[in-house]
Length: 290
Image (tube, rainbow, N blue to C red; front, top):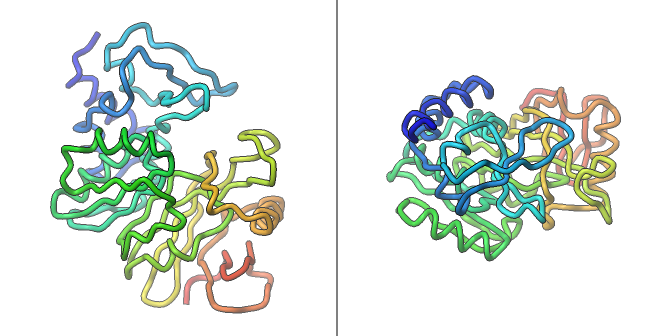
C-alpha cells in the first residue's frame, strides 16, 4: 500500500481532474489536510457515486484507503457521510476563497471540508462552522482544535447570525434562499447552497426528496448574480424547509429547473416570463443583475 504522502498527492490530483478544479489553494488543501482525522477509526464504510448507491467495507484501517473520490460513512445507519470530494470541491472551487476572508460553513459535520476552508483563508482569516447535531459538533470541535482561525458552533444555521461574511458554504438542503444568509453577504460575498425538494413526510431519495440544484449567489454593487452549479442530493436543513417554497420549487423543476438563472431578484415585482422561480421575497430570474 502506498505511503500517505504519496496517497494524498495522488488524491488531490484525482479530485482536481474529476471536479475540474482551477483554484490552486484548494488543491493544496486537499493534499495537506489529513482526511482520516475527521472520519473516526477504520476500517471504514465507503460509497462510490455509482447507482445503486451502497456501502463497501475497506479491507483494513490503512488511511490510504480513503484517499479516493468516495463518500465515507460517519453514521451508516443514518446514511450520514463525509461528502463526495469531487462534488464538494467543485462547489468550493466556485467560491474563490482567499487568505484573510471571513467564511461561514453551515452543516460542517465532523469538520473535514471546514479544514479545507481553514487552509484557504489561512490564519489571517476566520471560519465559523455551524453544526446542528451536538455530537457531530463536538467531534468537529475536537478535530479542528489545531486551527486557531476556526470556531465551531453547535446550533441552527438558519438562526445563528455569524455576522458579515465573504463566503457562506451550506452543506444541508433548503427549499429557498434564507434571508439571513443573503443579508449576511458582504459586497462581493458568495453564497453556495443546495436547493432541494422536501415535501411534508419525505424520506431521503424517495420521489425526488433531497434532490435538487446547487446554486451560487454573489452580491454585486447592484443586485445579486445567481448561477446554477450542478444537480445535488442532501439531507434537509429543517429550518430552511417550507411547504409553499417546496411547491414552487417543484413547479420550477418541472418547467426545466434553474439552469438558466442569471440573477436573484429581491425587490417586489409581479411574476413575469423571465422568472424561473418566483417566491416570497426572492425570485430566480433569467434577467442579468441590475
